[in-house]
Image 1 (cartoon, rainbow, N blue to C red):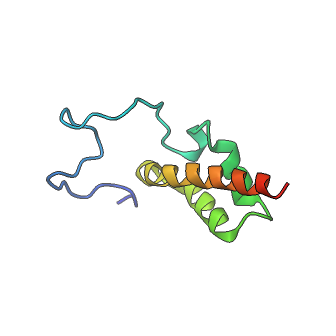
Image 2: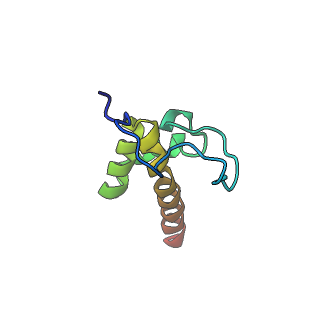
Length: 93
């Protein structure tokens, strides 16, 4: 079994939108770090950066190897880390 495979179906648990729950906005499919135009380069930098905090580096490395469902869970955190990191870098100028 693949690590991200859904092994059972639970009532009320679905990874696909249902007619009763519409998504807020339509985004292009970004199911991995390599297909995410907003984060692709930042993730490589964060994963390899020597001055990147270890927590950010670890989350970035996890995102680079994550399967689609896991990447979807990590993406909002990654966007926020990128935003905060940019803020922290400009604050010290």
